[in-house]
Length: 392
Image (cartoon, rainbow, N blue to C red; front, side, top):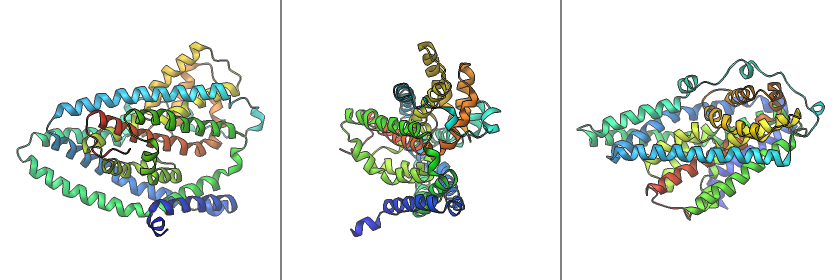
């Protein structure tokens, strides 16, 4: 029993339960705790860039074989495209079968769609300019290649390794604040929006969570089983990161810890450094499930019939627009707006009905994204024979 009280997971879990209770019974007080979640996520974000940089630079400069970098990159992009497309199909399939949008609009309360939803459109230049993760990834690859060919390579690697150790040590102590961050994030969500807002759209929320669980257990579980690994052992290994994302609704909050955990699992530093940051921008399994389901939901809400050609067009559009659903504030609704505008058949104003419960579905998206990126890293590491300590 004493071991339980020594685990950070226990305290994060207790914090989430306490936050929900505070949000239900004292919503005004709960809303005022938002700063705890915001400040914690901001604190962890400080570590994202240096950890990505040092992990990739040390991985590439220590490897010696630059061809492997290109091979890992190509494998990652192919894997991301296949799996995210499958997640789009699952989200669409669940929505078409269970029909969460077959309800009357009169029972829903729609807030006005914000300006960020209607006045902006996604474009790749803005995405790359605002996505510091991708910028750090590219810079680190260049630095790693330069160091790899430097005459004092070993000495540089040694010095960078020492700095990296200090960064990860600082992260370890920062993570002790995770219960406070999870408490603030969850308390604000429940206090601000209230559990009662879930009732009219409970079926949609249940469909998003159900599709996400199905994707994790069946699809990702099947992928790991192919490589003779257990999805349950993997989920147990990252339970702290999952709870952290559940509390903060931010997968970025767990990015540094996830990279550290994957290395401890046995994935090489090179694979972790290349796959995880790229996956956070291009391997958004949970977001893809939500996006396809949200479009179908709005179509059903407005009784818009979607032919096979419409569904095929939807998949093709989301395959492009969903890749930009990271690194830009409010990007989820921007992507949905872009998608609906491109289709010309589904009313864009239908997005207003999603605003009330979007926050409650963000946890499902973020957790599925987190789990999916970890699986992608393990798969690429296994394919490169860079996985040294398998989880059976």
